Amino acid sequence: MTQLQSLRGMVDLLPGQTQRWQAVESMARSHFRRSGCLEIRTPLLEVTELFARGIGEATDVVGKEMYSFQDRGERSCTLRPEGTASVVRAALQHGLLAQGGQRLWYAGPMFRYERPQAGRQRQFHQIGVEWLGVASPVSDAEVIALAWDLLADCGVEGLALELNSLGTPADRKAYRTTLVNWLDARREHLDADSQQRLNTNPLRILDSKIPETQSLLQDAPMLEQSLCDESRERHQAVIEALDALAIPYQLNPRLVRGLDYYGHTAFEITSDQLGAQATVCGGGRYDGLVEQLGGGPTPAIGWALGMERLLLVLAAAAEANPSGRASRLVQPAAPDVYVVNRGDAATHQALVLCRRLRGFGLVVERDESGSAFGKQFKRADRSGAAFALVLGDEEAARGVVRLKALQAASGAETAFPQADWSLNDLDALVAQLRKG
Ligand code: ATP
Ligand code: MG
Image (cartoon, rainbow, N blue to C red):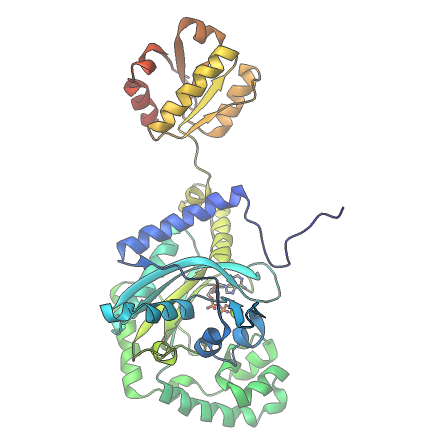
């Protein structure tokens, strides 16, 4: 029988990797808690119209990347390609915005039918925040700082923040006319996709990944020139707040995001470790989206980071600096104690002891090979535990368990009487293990 495989671009996360993922996720949760962000979980499947209306018909995501199908009730459904539209839909559906500003975060799988390559999958994972009902330029800097500090705390290196302003809808309309006039005169130099977009969504051309198109765009008029005074002032205020936070940035007047709902602040955090898929985190302000999805006027800003890409950058940082922060984060945690045990009576005693110690919150690994002590001790060393507890025929007969320091050169040993366990008094042993 042929071995069944996962679908192309759909990737299994094996135990060695899930430990790293959990470390990043718990780092993110800690940052969110400290910033007053609360978690929201929305369904993976939504009505197709949500994304068509939210993200924009002429984007790559809606135009050619969505997993859409008719369900048995003949509704058009789509596996979510991103989180923002769903979060806004849920906030509106449940009246969250009536309760004032919302600082929300989410994490989970997203689906886009793209060509799989390193850092680009069909099922990938994002962690993101959406701050709804939040208007001030200072909040733009605060939400960027949240992403920046999270990535820095994970220990990723070689990061750069790129910043742009996409202005108001009126600014973009004015720019659109300028850009279309300029590009129309050079139409024959554009790739076929971009030619099409001249009529549907010309700003998307700036986001083209085709090198020839990008080099043509070098001389194109910039959106910056079409910004009104208020947009400029707002952008300046964001910059000043970033300066106050001492977060470095590069102004990139060519930065547009892949989704249509962005205005004013747009940003990406890129890494020099990722090759073609350089963007780890992307986001910006989307003041029009809530209204577009049927709510009242509501300013909002958010970002999403790609977990797969973050893990790639982390692995690179860990390799470059084995004693650095990234390395510590991605290293699997060692157990508190490794239990070496052999012989029927001793094994039962070990079983009881393990359970009791786990009850104290200790991480306990019991060797279940039954092999010779020498082999078990080798595994104990490899586990990284600070201590081994040893229970063999001899210990069982004497009614003790031996505690042995593993990583210390001295290999100091203490014997603890087993009588203490039944007296519900493991305190001395637990205190020793916690010191490790
Ligand atoms: P790109 O330009 O690389 O396609 P994007 O602009 O489409 O990215 P967003 O929609 O802003 O990306 O998503 C935010 C982040 O999610 C990206 O910066 C990236 O880290 C990650 N991401 C997006 N698409 C994928 C994918 N197919 N596989 C893995 N990660 C992805
Ligand atoms: Mg994309």
